[in-house]
Every structure is written in C-alpha cells, then in structure tokens.
Length: 261
Image (cartoon, rainbow, N blue to C red; front, side, top):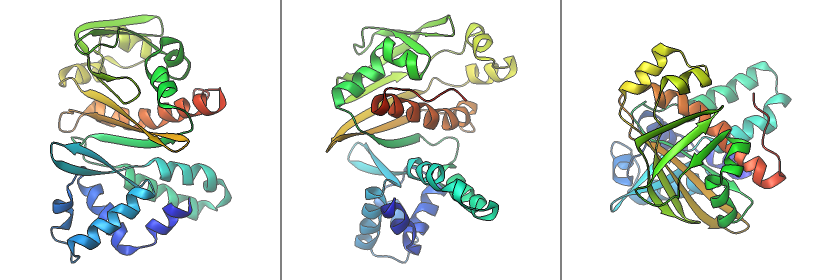
C-alpha cells in the first residue's frame, strides 16, 4: 500500500488519473496532449502508477492503452476506512468513486494479483465446480474458440447461438461473449422487466481475462467491453466485477469464497 500512497502523493500523477477518469483507455500520445509535461516525464509517471496498480494497460494493435484500476483503492478502503472518522472516510470514498467512474461507453478494466498459479486460476475460471462456488454460475462448453456456451444460474439455464467462446489459451487468456438477457434469467436474478428489456436492447458485450505470472502471484486483468453509449449493463457490471473477483481471490488464497452480501 505504500506504493499506492506514494503514487497518489504527486500532483502530476493525480492529474494523469484525472485525465483517465475523464476518458478511460488513452494512449501515451493522448495523455500528453494538453499537459505541460514532456513525453518522457508522462511515461515515467505512468510507470509509477502502473507499478502501484493504479493504472493498467491493454493493447489495441500497436497502441498501448492506459486504464484506471480501482482494486488498490478498494484495498485501502477495506483496510483503513474503519480507523477514520466520518469526514476522513468520506474523503476516501470520494477518491474511490473518482477513480472508478468512467464514461459508460468505455471498457471496464479491473486488475488484481492472486497468490496462485496460472493453471489453477484458469481452472477457477472454467471449471463449473469452481465457478459455482464464487460466482454461482456453471458454464456448459468445451472452451474451444467458436464453441457455444450455456450459463446455469439459480437453476435457470440460458443458451443462445451468440453466447460463444472467442479466445481460449489455457493459463494465459480467455474471452467470451456475455450471456443473453432472457425473462427466465431476469426472474431468477430478481431483475425488473423494464431493466431486462433495456439490457436486451443493447448489443452483446464481451469479457476477457488475461493471466500473467508475477512472482508467486498471477496478475489477472478483467476487461469487459463492447458497450453501448450510456449502457445499463456497463453500470451494473462495474459494481459486480470487483465483488466477484474479490470472492475468486479469496477462494484461491484461503479456500473460502466471500459470503454473499
């Protein structure tokens, strides 16, 4: 956590976080535009933010995109928030909110480090016995690119020809299209018909998991994208993914998933 506080202590780095808060997923060139800083200085500041886990990166062709990552802020809040009075707690909450909020059409990117192996994390993402424990979902698929997927949750199964595996590199990368918003699913999940109808009108989104060995841990980056502007789903998953990945992390590191809230 010292790296996080050290990274946030610098005004220039906070300005870069503000720029990413305004529009997530920017290149180095875009971040440099309008800033009174040399490209090399911006690059060094981004490296510090990335080392602290406050910024994560993805590739789009030859371009490197920079995204805010709220996981370290969540960790700070969970560890320290109860020690502060209300005013200081609200200050931390405001910071957390500022770092998590992005325009709804942006990709949602979340990075964490899990003390496990790539093979075990892959199994946790694909094996129904694992996914049922922290997610409550069982997938039906052979995990081959192009294969269809069924999603079984709360006793209801959702199947559709467009629910497919997009990429599958065991221990490295997994990507698939998001599930279909059927009335059966909405009934089981307690989602109002008005909300379900809005979700069903949006184009189908995509989730991608990137796994990278990092010493005794694995760096897991979850990217959920392909949202409509002002997407209802984008708002919903931005609250769901941090809790879900925290439960996955707990299961792999302690043997117990987090209790449902």
